[in-house]
Image (cartoon, rainbow, N blue to C red; front, side, top):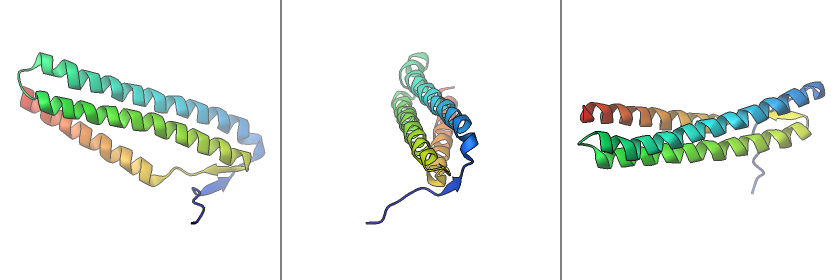
Length: 123
């Protein structure tokens, strides 16, 4: 089995403290994003059906999608932060995994389209 490591770039040791602090701020941003998606889950899955007379099942499915994306954002934020900390100790900085960024982009786009459909159907 091969050792899979993300591609890295070299880091100037003088920039490590700033990079570490930026990584911590980014980790918190992943948390904020996750919490926002979880709040959207509650709003769409529980509150929206109370305000409309249609689309309850669809609202619940959409809410579950937001919950999954929220949990994934928090988990990925931790993974990314940990990866950065370990790489900085080696004098490197890991490049973001384009597959993860693509997955979040696709998930967000699908949830947005589903929300749009829900708004149109519930109008």
